[in-house]
Amino acid sequence: MNDLTRYLPLHKAIFEGNLASVKQLCDLEEHALEARITVNLDTALHVAVGTGMANDIVEYLLNKMSTDQVALKNSDGNTVLSIALIAGNMEAAKLLVEKDESLNGDKNSSG
Image 1 (spheres, rainbow, N blue to C red):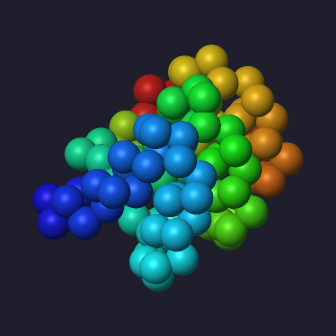
Image 2: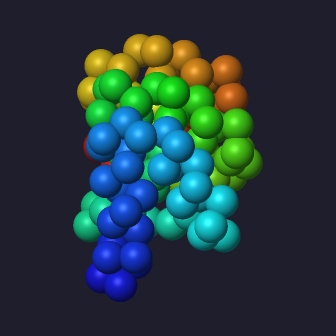
């Protein structure tokens, strides 16, 4: 629960679409890119992709993240690509596959 409180400003900045704040928070916090910031163990990228409207933040995060960080799954076994498709965020899905094509074959817990 401590991490959820710790990363609440990042979560809020993503939902507000505030790229400048996201950049500042990611620069200040060493583990912000792989931190689990929701109860469902979503990363900042999961949250940004899921909003369906923060693709400038998605692009920023993708440029900073390693492929291992991009491949992290939440507690439902969803990759960020799964979240993009569930949210209907095709622009983010395209950016994600450009970063890591292997996301295409990665199944979530539901198969």
